[in-house]
Amino acid sequence: MAADLNDLQAFMAVARAGGFREGARATAGSASALSEAIRRLETQLGVRLFNRTTRSVALTEAGASLLARLGPALGEVEAALDVVNGFRDRPAGTLRLNVPISASRLVLPKIVPGFLAAYPAIRLEVIAEENFIDLLVAGCDAGIRYDERLEQDMIAVPIGPRAQRFTTSAAPSYLDRHGRPQHPRDLLGHACVRGRFPSGVMTPWEFERDGEVVRVDPTGPLVVSIGGGVDLAVDAAIAGVGILWLFEDWVRPHFESGALEPVLEPWWQSFPGPFLYYPGRRLVPAPLRAFIDSSRHRPAAAPEHPKNKRPPEGGLSKA
Image (cartoon, rainbow, N blue to C red; front, side, top):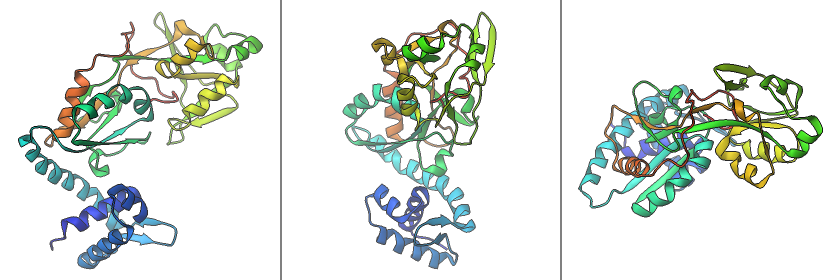
């Protein structure tokens, strides 16, 4: 039984986007055309792939099974077709990246403008989210993560600053009212702005000094989602709500302006920077090869810190 490739691509678009209208926007097509393609595919296969209501579209068990197998298969087809790109003078096509929101804020802005200027025939799609995904099933060519989040069969390439730190900070007005912590355990007596992972987990804050590692689980009046809620957390800290734990690069402008004051700086823990990762068992698409070259040729934007540890869990922006 041979299904039309266009219908299979329509199925993938609807499944990934979670609806016909969303799929149409992602593919620059029409919802009616996608709906007709799905109807045609379901008729040919003899099974229902989606449960549809007036308000939602959800995969059936059969649809979920097809998605799990079809994503990698279509990825291999696209990779095979991309070999033709090697005969072009300049790489062309679409490059899809899945990245944590912190990378879209702190890493990619230093790389993307130069990359797009150098390769005008490449279209870059960036999906910024905190959930961990299967790249092939999601239709992405590569992602950005930290080393302890990488699967064993992935190829990892350093990208962005090679050392980062988590910082604690607060508005001077808050510290004038409540005092300045001298030890991480002092945070247990302060209002702290916390972050929660999509899984629902809030993990302790981690500090280190002279080989002593301290983990604390502070509380406070505000909890935000890690990634999407970070800007709110920063604004709240500037307004004096409490103490914030966040990437140094994210809050450095507020240190320089005086809106936030560093807290417990001798205890800030450093850790290695992120990696661009992609499956090692398939051909590397020409747009991804070009992006890897572009990111490698850019010097690191931050100096090395003396202690490179794994990224501590539970910050507001790491994933």
